[in-house]
Image (tube, rainbow, N blue to C red; front, side):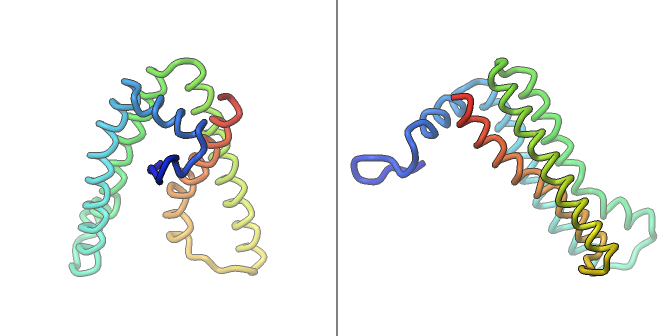
Length: 153
């Protein structure tokens, strides 16, 4: 949250939560592990997309280049698991509720999309649908964490 004149542009409870969470050792360690992996992920996505568009290559090499962006995301997931193991019980409960909300939201959206696809109401290529699962998980996790944090604090 940013400062504006005499106050803040966010609710006090959220500002206090952010200050508390960002100052914890577990959170600092998580960010220290997560950000390099996300930067690497971004670079690999651009590089692999460019390589796949501009070069013809054998299928095994093509598959390796196509799957390469998933490797840094696995580092992010391991960092998150380590974070979960080091936070206190209340924070763990908040995080697990957020993960549960994310799983339920994405499952519901994907299921509804599948039914719409089978009913020939929409026609979304499978690769496009699959690539949006992880970002939708992250977005719905953020909403779940926001709600759980507000409920428990």
